[in-house]
Amino acid sequence: MTMRDDEAQATRRRILDRTGWLISINGTDVSLSDIAKAVGISKSGLLHHFPSKDQLFHAVVEDMIVQFRAKVASHIAMDEPAEGRFLRAYLRTLLIEGPTINGLCGPTLPWIGVTSDAAIRKLVDEDNKWWSDQVAQDRLDPAKSIVIERAADGIAAAMASNQITQEQAKPALDLLMLMATNNDTETIE
Image (tube, rainbow, N blue to C red; front, side, top):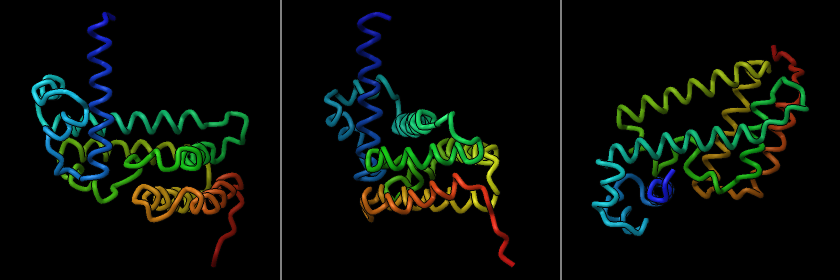
């Protein structure tokens, strides 16, 4: 890779990061000029990397999906029981990353407009299916998995929208971690 390629990759990385940050604050009404200014490049420089706003937003969502999956994978503890391992990694990611995951977890208000685009909606739907498949392979009781995953999603959305702090979320995430560790399920009749 040449120095020029490295610079182009670094610029692309800054564009993706700053665009994600701007969307999480301002929603999808953010202009290409505002994005270029935040990155420190010209609008034509931005359009060189991403020819349209739609392509840029698609790349941002795709990048966020890849980043978040990698964060979760980095928290998988192979020395733990297999049952619930993936969900525990997801919970650890929320506990450790906390506010830095802003925008990565679900459709918080600023991101709603992004998911109205058909190509992005397809990408998000495929990601949702991937998550469902991972959770299904976790070998926890399916009802328990749904409760843990959806509760964690709600907590993540609340943290991302500053409704609760990471410290406030910790006891609830710890409880979910315990649920994902213990596969005993009593049937309610």
